[in-house]
Amino acid sequence: MTGWLAEHMAAHGGSGILAVVLLLPALEAALPMVGVLLPGQTAVVLGGALAWRGHITVEAALLTAVVGAVLGNLVGYAVGRRWQAWVLAPQRGPALRRRYTERALGLIERHGGCAVFVGRFVAVLRTLVPTLCGATRMPLRRYLLWSVVSGAVWAPAFVLIGYLLGPAGPG
Image (tube, rainbow, N blue to C red; front, side, top):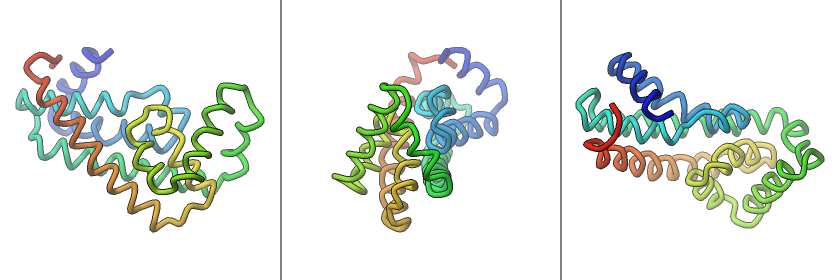
């Protein structure tokens, strides 16, 4: 999958690479069901690898990944805020979905903003936490602060992992 994605990213040039580095992390956080299917973190790592290969600058990959992460978090938060009843409905759904939702809600209730930070680094939580923060009415300023901080740590970490793996990676 990563080879196919890297090949298609590179085939569309710098703007295509940056579009994927922006959109996949944004979709992953913004729409939980889409986020499960789309490899946002993988796109960021591949963006770093393609930066090493000279397709884009590493600075462009870093900035684009941060913006994608934060924008996706904000859209996820807005979705949760708007459709609170629907978002919290999985608590009555299948056991696995209910278990993940309950864990994420517990994390948010116990740790608040830190849950946003930790959630950015854990695949399942990355898709759930933004929406659940909106549904639980976490104050927007607090959420935004933690979203920016987590995105500003997460994106460079994974872009740089891709950049360091660039010589060995696809692309």
